[in-house]
Amino acid sequence: MVTPFTRSGALDEAAVRRLGRRQIDAGIHFLVPCGTTGENPTLTLAERLRTVEILADEANGQVPILAGAGGYNTKEVIHLAGEMKKAGAAGLLSVTPYYNKPTPEGLFQHYRAIAESTPLPIVLYNVPGRTGVNIDVPTLVRLATIPSIVGVKEASGNLTQMCEACAAVPPDFIVLSGDDALTLPLMAVGGRGIVSVASNEIPAEMVQMVEAAERNDFAAARAVHARILPLMQINFVEANPVPVKAAMAAMGLLEEVYRLPMVSPRGESKDKIVQVLRDLDLIKKPVHA
Image (cartoon, rainbow, N blue to C red; front, side):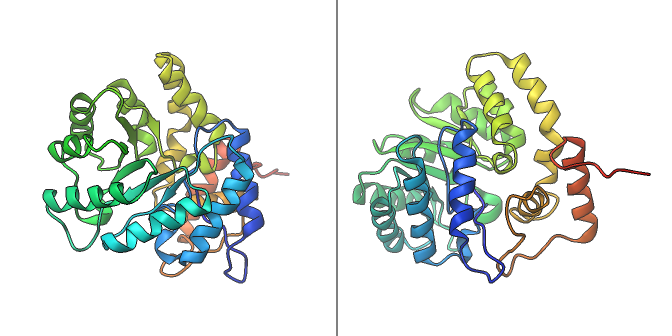
């Protein structure tokens, strides 16, 4: 989920609740606040916890809250995990340590320490393009032996690695795509779904695609995928979450407010975003005289 802000730059609590309800009513299976798309690095601890509290209250048990709780300081992540549980999180999405580039052994020890500190299930988040460190398949298999590590959000963009992961992990270990456009290919080889950017704009369509793939109706899933692929692609015309927030603002879902160092997309990027929204009938097309 994106994190909406007011014009003054504060957390827009009413919009958090409204956007959460929109997702739930569209049939999504879980909510993921305070991740990359949620501008996590610029949120205060109080804002992260308040976001989770609001969504847990709004969901009221209808869907679980998988809260973003990762970082490069293991001790701090352990503290954050405890606070997220108090706020109502049912699980944690924990990005790999970034910048300090731990070895595979360091990754294993980091996640084992977090897992031993909390009763919450943990989904690993592998996004080497942002963090500079990759969870390779042997390390993933080793991490999957820790009972409370239940899955991985695989955003390496390496489809071969994703295929190898699906083949190597235990059957009950959940491999989720971290890239909307790769969801369907991943599910074809055993993946279980997506932690989605596009669901901020089109939650119902993402549900349709994933649920069709889950029941092995890949013809129906491909039809949805083909139709929404331009949106999946335009969401990365600039760094996420800038395009998706611009799109949601154009759709009237939130104020287009970012926190530095994120800024509004360039004019040519915004024009492309708006055109895709119009093509998909997500905003009204201009009426010509």
